Every structure is written in C-alpha cells, then in structure tokens.
Length: 110
Length: 112
Image 1 (cartoon, rainbow over the protein chains, first blue to last red):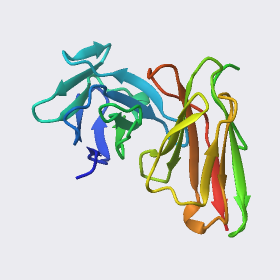
Image 2: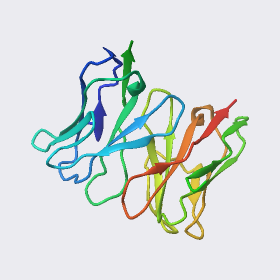
Image 3: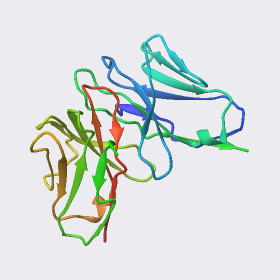
Image 4: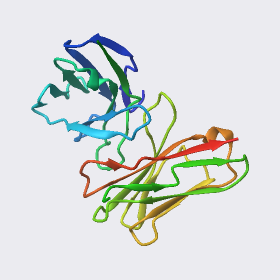
C-alpha cells in the first residue's frame, strides 16, 4: 500500500458546485496533515493544514478521519480559479519527511 | 525577493553528463528539501537537511545523486552520468522547525 493515496481525477465540475476529495494514508501514527495546491507548471503552495477537529477557511473545509485513515478537502461554490491539482501531504510519525500524494486534478467548468 | 530561489530554471543535457542544481532557501529556515516531480505525479521525496546535516535520503535515490548543504544555507543537488529517466522537475523547499513547506520554482531537467 502506498504511504499516501489520492484519486488522480480529473474531477470536472460546473461553477458553483461542491466537490470533495479524499486522501488515504498508511501510517496510523501520523500527526500532521496538509493540503497543497499546484497550478499547471507551478510549484506547490500550501492551501491549508488539517487539524484533528476539522477546520474551515472560507469555501474550503478540511477534515481528518483517524479511524479510517483519510483526510478530506471540501470545496464549496467552486470558482473557475479553483482549477488546479490538489496534493495531500502526510509526514510519517517521527519524521519531517513530507510525503505527497499523486494529486487530484480539478477542472471547474463555466 | 525573500522566497526560495532555484537555479537554473531549465537545464538541457546529454545523457552521461553531470549536472548540478542550486537552491537558496528562505534565510531563517533550517530545513531544506529536494523533490523530483514528473508529469501527472506528485512531488517525490529525495532528501532533506536540517541545517547542514542530511537527515534522510530516499531509497529510490541511486548513488548517482548527491546533495550537500555545506554551511546550512544553500544546497546543491548533483546528478552524475545522467540518464533519460532523470528528466523531471527538481523542486527545492524549505521550512522552519517543521512548519509548512515553501517551494522554489524548480529546475526542469531534460536529458537527451
């Protein structure tokens, strides 16, 4: 099993739609979780950290399910500018070796 | 510009040649990371440093790859005897005490 797994997509959604991505991880002891956004031919940039109790930043909500070992990202009211690849990052416990998933491509259509 | 800086932005080389990339992290950041990314894949971990110490190196990294961070500031990544399979984007990132990673714009390597 890969350390971090994501559905590569693409997810094609209309503007205004709500879309959710999941990311599963294999190390049950992992303590830190992040979502990064990567635009085409650009470097990844932090979108948000994921906290145990779940957290929200505007239209974006991140959640953690420790029992099933996955994190999720929910985007409400999708904008054309949300089109990008969303990468989940999970460092194994006891290390700062940040492991990236393959990314999920999102296309928001007009 | 106080972000992560990588040079060169692009490198084209012939198979068998050696190449070296440079990364200048954000000045106060003590951790520095190297990743490799190919089309359609997420960044693949190569190695990371805390100050000048190389703390971890991917098992996927062959002996042709070496990285240094001699004074705990900038870092170099060298690939010896390049192969076509080495063609990729090489990304450098830095962080402060395990906080979020800040990435440079990357070096795109093409091995002909």
